[in-house]
Image (cartoon, rainbow, N blue to C red; front, side):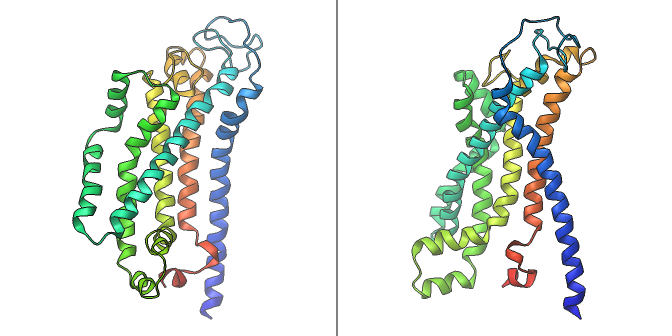
Length: 285
């Protein structure tokens, strides 16, 4: 009887998850496609027209410099997306080993040495770090990746360490030690498998934050040229003509928002959906 009652609710959850995934993929898909393959279809630059004008062969109008807005949109996403994704991946390449090491050690002073310096980085506002780096030298997109990764890494490492500490205290870990399992499985394999949902949820937040920080840095002229084909730069430089030719601002801003919202929704749905068809009772075990 209980299984009969449980099946419809599980089917409803699966249906809701499917709809959420569809919406997330729809939000993510368009910005990603434009960012990744847009430059191949941008074509050559056309003669500049009147600033903030509509029509005359420019179906999204022209920007502050008289350039075709659609061509700028096709060219402007790759830097935003690639820098944010690369920075997030680099942050986790450092944060995951660091957090797992702090969680697995049985010596409190080792965990303190590993984690306490991260508190100093967390105390400094992320945008201030970017501006300090920009004051020392003018970073390009490639140099901006480690800067944003440095900003994202401390919080990610603390999340990994907190989740890993709970896993390390489970009887299953002691059982693995008694069975003579390898150090890799005890310290890395089992904890990573156990905290994968926490990592998925945190990764969505980190990627959205990286997108925000990349866009903000570009908005302030850090990492890109003031007249570069970049979605965030387009929003900044075309603001004076918002009421004359809104597409130059609305389209790039909407693409950035859609990518951030879709990423969070996709990771949130993955967090809510049971993996491998297992029920909650199996997950507790």
